[in-house]
Length: 125
Image 1 (cartoon, rainbow, N blue to C red):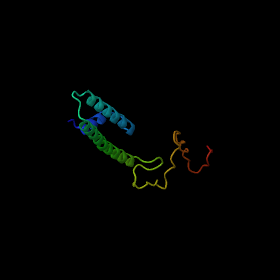
Image 2: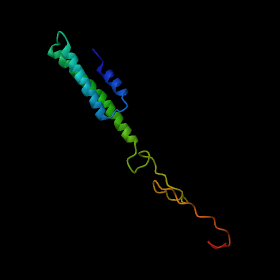
Image 3: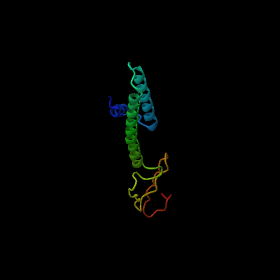
Image 4: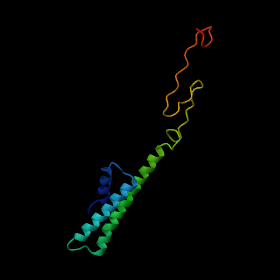
């Protein structure tokens, strides 16, 4: 009997996109492939054995999906939410008191003012 869990893990590991939707497509293809194989058997399997094979596949799908969903949750916990810091629980950094405010996104910072010469007002030669 094939090890459905290993087959599913290898199939998913080979995919660049391992999203929940993609995983569901892989599971659907595995179900269809197993049903086709069972239908082609000559002599046909008794209904109990056929159902047992389908149940084994469903158990493997549940196991692999639980692992993948747990990995998805771990990754989501590591990603900062929009507008938050880099990591959950990481202390927020404060800017030094003399630091300039951050520049607006996409626009360069204005140039610093020219140095002033001692004893002269700005604009005087």
